[in-house]
Each structure stands twice: as C-alpha cells, then as structure tokens.
Length: 466
Ligand SMILES: *[C@@H]1O[C@H](CO)[C@@H](O)[C@H](O)[C@H]1NC(C)=O
Ligand SMILES: *[C@@H]1O[C@H](CO)[C@@H](O)[C@H](O)[C@H]1NC(C)=O
Image (cartoon, rainbow, N blue to C red):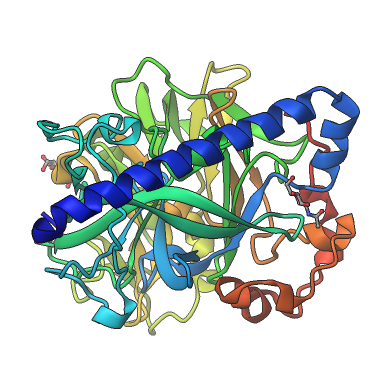
C-alpha cells in the first residue's frame, strides 16, 4: 500500500479527480468529432502536424544498453528519463512512497499526491498483468506488479497526473495520463539495475501511452521510433511522420495470445541465401538491447558466421565477457568499419518466398565493438533465457531505420532512415518554434540536433496518408 493511513482523504480527492478526468475525456471526444465534420479541416490539421507527439531520443546499445526519452510529469513538472519499451504496456516511474530498490535519489523520484487510480477504473482492470489482483473495494487503489523478461520487476500503484506533451506543431498540451508509481523495484539479474527513472510503455494494451493518447482523441495509435548508431534518434506517437511511400509493411499477428508487437512467421536468410530455418515468430521490442533468436536459428547463424570467419584475421576469444560470443583481431579494434567486411547480412523474410517483406540486419546491426576492442555478436540465444519459441528484434537491429508500429491497421513497417536528425516539422510547417518554446524536457533538442541540416529531411514528412 502506498499511503495506508490516508485512505479516507485519498478516496475523496480521487473522486474529484475522476470526475474531472471524465470531463476532459468528453471534451476531447467532442473536439475530434467536430473536426471530422469537415474533411478539409482534417487535412489542414494534418498538414500542420497538430496531432503527433515527438520526443528526441538518446542512448545506445553498448555500453548503455537502452535508448530513452525525457518526459515531464506533474505540476510543477519534473523531468524523468524513461527507457522506451514497445515490449510492455505500462509506463512507470520510481516513486517516493517511500521506495525500495530505486536508483534515483528521492528528489528525482515521483511524489504521489493522493492521485491513485481506484481498482475499479477501466485502466486498472485492463492492466492484463501476470498476477491479476482482486478488487475487493472499488475505491481501493489500483496496485500493479510487472515483471520483465530479464527478471527485473516493479511493484506500485497506478496514478494519474498532468503530463505536458509537445505536439509536432509546437503546441504544448497538458494531458492527464495514467502511469505507475513504482515503489518496489527488484533486479535479480546479473546486470546492474538500469539508471533510468522508469519505463515508457508503448505496448498495445489499454494503458499503453499511445493507446491512452488515442482514446483522448489526441493522436492516432501509431508509434514511430528511429534509433541512430551515434546515440540519437526520435520517437513519435501519431501517424504524421510516417513516410507515404517506401515503407515495408508486414501484418501484426492479431490472434497471438500476447499483447506484443509480433510478426511472422518469417524465414531466416544469411547472405541472401536460405538457412533452412523457417517459421520464426518475431517480437519487435525496443526495450531489449540485443536481438534474440531461438536455439535453432541461433545455432544456424553462429555456424554460418564461424564458417565465414575461417581464414580471416579474427579469432574466437573468451577474454571479453561483454557478450557470450566475441572475436579478436591482431590489434584491439576501434570501429566496426575495420571488420564488417568479414560479416554478411542476415535477413528475416516475412510473407511468402516470391514477394515477401525483407527485414535486413547488416553487420553493424548485429555486432558491437567492446571497450576492450573485441567484436562481439549482438544476437543472443533466446532459448537460454526462457523465450522458448519466440524471437526478439531489439535495439541493436533497429539502428538506422524508422520502425512504425501501426495499431490502426495492425501492421508493422520499417524504412531505412537517418535517425541522427529530428524530422524538422516546425520548419516545414511554419509553426514558429524557437528552442525556448520547448519546456525543459525538450532542451535536449538543442543539444542533440544542433548543426543537423534538417532541410534534407523533408521526405520524412508524410502527407497524412493514414
Ligand atoms: C497545434 O495543434 C493543437 C491540436 O490540434 C491545436 O490546439 C493548436 O492550436 C495547434 N498549435 C499551433 C501553433 O498551430
Ligand atoms: C541455446 O540455449 C539452449 C538452452 O539453454 C541450449 O540447449 C543450446 O545449446 C544453446 N545454443 C547454443 C548454440 O549455445
């Protein structure tokens, strides 16, 4: 329990918040209904990119292991760095309730303010978490417990609070969103706990950020991320940055029991040739740093890579524990450019053999150079960590492409892209957006994207096709 001795007061306050929330909800729906009346107006709004939220992203696969955005929460707003995760629904932040297992000092934790959600709320019943908790009294706070595939977990309660979000047209909207206040984090795995303040949940469930924005009538339920090899990128919610052509689309498995973004089955190719491995189901998961193949696919790829490296100046080494499989050169390696010529492209072919959809993973999207100067395989054995038949495409293989999770049309798409540059929607669309117009959370834009010539980036802007 987060705040057991203040139960009474919290419930009263909460009733008020709930009414207010419903009111906002109605207001939003009315607005979106109104714009539907005139298709010309809708088109104009699309042109002005008024219903897409954009975040600059930073992070890397190695050594950091994640990509994150900065999100302002509360009034006055406080800034939280959140790991972007398309593999789970719930957004949560470290919570001063007080907190067990928090990595942030108290001043950087979220302080709940009698704003818990009751367990009877639709977002609580729709949590779909492994342990469905009973809701004895409908006014009880909504507790959650979430576990991740790396065995990390968070326990807390759902709260609603103001989240100022910047739309792509430059306006800042103060929305009330639901997220978890996580006061008990466990991290039993071999790796240190992630230093971020929490997770940005972008999964398909009701409580996912994109689903919430959609139900408030703010954006389409479409998520785009673009992660660069150099530690930058962007994340958007809404469909307005989706290119109108050139995207390879494959359908999402809708009948799968999981709420994940799963596609397949796919066939595994190496150097454009069949490997004999078929029927691969793939989960697109930005919360995973590396890519995981099931034991069969993993073995096949490992054998093919090792065969290729025969007679090349790279030898197996166990002197680097960064990842399970590493090679060393004659001298410590500084960059992938020195060795990528010894490796081939791996391809997942979705759909049929003749005109399937190809997801290509070039060497720079499955290898890392470690601090010791070794080159290591960023594809890991999923069977070993209990993924059973599933396969995961993680951040390492998302670098340099725009990945589009289209929940409106139940499909997932990708297109190669220069993710170092934030698509300059303001410049193109006349929204007068000096850097000062961004709240502190977007100060990063200046840092990350200064000097980038975004005028070359116009092709990223769609004409509102969806
Ligand atoms: C941006 O879009 C929002 C939502 O449609 C609208 O309320 C706001 O006025 C727009 N801002 C600008 C600068 O056009
Ligand atoms: C992958 O993991 C499974 C389960 O632990 C194991 O049986 C298999 O040998 C592993 N494959 C390789 C190539 O290490």
